[in-house]
Image (cartoon, rainbow, N blue to C red; front, side, top):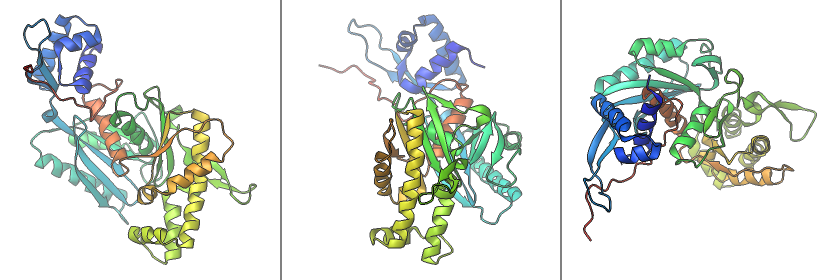
Amino acid sequence: MRTTNEKQVLQQIVNAGPISRSQISRNLCLNKVTVSDIYSQLLSEGLIREVGHGVSTRNGGRKPVMALLNVGYGYVISINILRSRFSMITCRLDGRSENYQSVSTRDVDLTTVLDMIDERIAATIAASETKLLGISFGLDGVIYDNQILGASLKGFKNFDLAKYFSDKFQVPVVLENLANESAIYERDFSGKGVYNNLISVTIRDQVSAGIITEGHLYRGHNGEAGNIGSCPLADRYEEKTSDTVNHYVAERPVLQKIMAYQKLDRVDVNRIRRDYLGHRPELLAILDEFAFYLAKVLGNLSNTFAPDAIVVNAPILELLPEIMDKVRTYVDSMAIMRKAPMILTKNAKEASLMGGASAIIHKALALDDLQLTFGNQRSAVLEEVES
């Protein structure tokens, strides 16, 4: 375990690198000897590397040595498990993702799915020149203290997924639900302080909300916060009738309605887009229902939590982003006090995967309780500019 000072020095190098020891000392109000000792330790561990000299002060003197996180130290793997597929990326310690894979698991049992994931991880390790530092898993359900307390997928509830893969590959494993992973992504990859209070609504097998308050993920009692898919929602036409949010808004019911009118047994995204642009009335009616009920969900979240923004992550909205305008119109018509900005994620395909990568990077660097900001590396000025 790292000391508080060690954590803060490493956090500075991750978030603000390339950076000098003297600048770290000033930023943290730590004496230079303490910072130099920690810096030397991190350098000997191979976690950081020196990249040249920065600009000297106006008073002259030696140019400071600049340091960066050593992204070649190792990598992490992030995996999302859904109803009929799993997706996987490898990620460097600076948050750069590589090798996206999506694997169908349709009509495959749990044991076979685990074997398929095992094989993909083993193949990645065999092909890599650096070491695996950790694995993260994301799935729909209730997850608390790295345990699956509830899951939409059969066989996963109370199965110790973290221990299973930690024992196999001898690395730390982090479990999180997809909505929380998406919220972590928006917090850590959008820039420092952009979203200190946000809600990320993920629409997959279930409708879930990841909640960030004052920069920290809020999980609630036993990880049950954000489990909005099971909440009741009044029917649009008969107020005395209600069903769950999942029934009206989750991905599967919406796609089933679309496949039914198209008389198809699979999802044809090109046909959906073509029918939308052609103003096919059956499709427009289904999407209007979806927009109406989603607006109810987002409006209630906005009024209840007063976030800086609500970010929506849904494949149907990635395919048809125009629907979001209708959602906003429905929200605007609601008699609520707080109407937060409602935006689509910029990375629907990988948002939860990247959020999972951030979670395991935090764990691998022993920085669980500190915020890291990725995709924010500054260019180092390695030589003094001549006037």
